[in-house]
Image 1 (cartoon, one colour):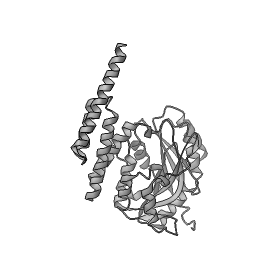
Image 2 (cartoon, one colour):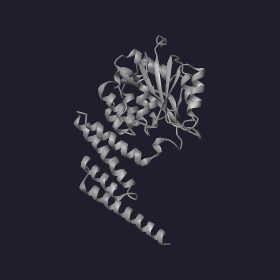
Image 3 (spheres, one colour):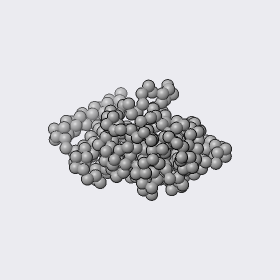
Image 4 (tube, one colour):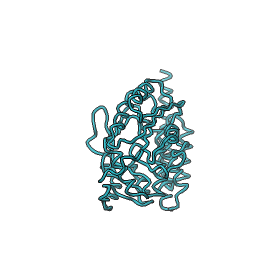
Amino acid sequence: MKEYYSDVLVSIVIPVFNGERYIEECLLSVLSQKHHFLEVIVVDDGSVDATKQIVLKIAAADSRVRYFYQENSGNSSAPRNFGFQYCSGEYVNFFDADDVMLPCKISNQLAVLIHHQDVSAVCCDYVNFSVKGDFSFTHFSECTNIQGAIKLKNICAECNAFIFENNDLLHIICTENFTINSSTLFRKKFLKATPFSTELWGSEDWLLHFELFSRFYVGVVNQVGFRRRLHDNNKTNNIERILFYKAKSREIASSFVNDDVLKIKLNNFSSSYYALLSKEIATQSFFMAFFYLLKSYKIGNNSLFFYVKLYVFILIKRLYNFKKYYVNKNY
């Protein structure tokens, strides 16, 4: 495809907290993009390590990098929203500070947005990696529903992407979360002034994608655009936090959808996540476990027998934990 968009500015927002281990590799991968006309906005969310020094050193060598500092917010939404207000580009990518961007990611996605002016965002595939190396499979290869949807679409020869109308992907993203923040290049004008919900400290990216998919066209590039790093400090390692915000985000989404079938599906997923959370925290707090069990019952449409069984499980788990604690205390 002809390179007729080299003068289009793309903004990359990178929130970071104590990212001294990975931020240099991340920034250098972004600055090495085939599409050179970038502004890279690094939002330091209260780091106490060498993050600032590393970023400022790179910024001194490359004027495309801008550094901002804010007091620690404890979540991902605040630094992303903060960085967004300084974006000058027509297109925006919120990229995680521990991920690594492949050279053609932005140019491939930008081609779609320029060729299809009605497309709000473009997602791409990615591959996970750890200290042991890259995984042998990509994320999309594990997402059977998005792969099925792609097979039913004709690829756009002009930009090598698949274009989906609004609502086409909603039922899919309910079932499988095929995209994340680092993946998506957004058309800025389709985003709200504060794109990410400050009510959520997890799954905020899922809710943003769901909102866009419900209203606008979306492009999908079936190619790997970046490498997603897995490590001990990933936010996704906290199972209780994951479950709570997955439940909460689906609950919020169900409040504004008009499709009754989709609303039921979202409520059922929210109910399931609350039920799983109830089981997860049963040994820590019986009252909170019971509270989330009641929320699950109120939202979902599982049988009463299902919740009775879950309640018995919580009681047994709680009593076993109490007995274990009592024995250890006395011996």
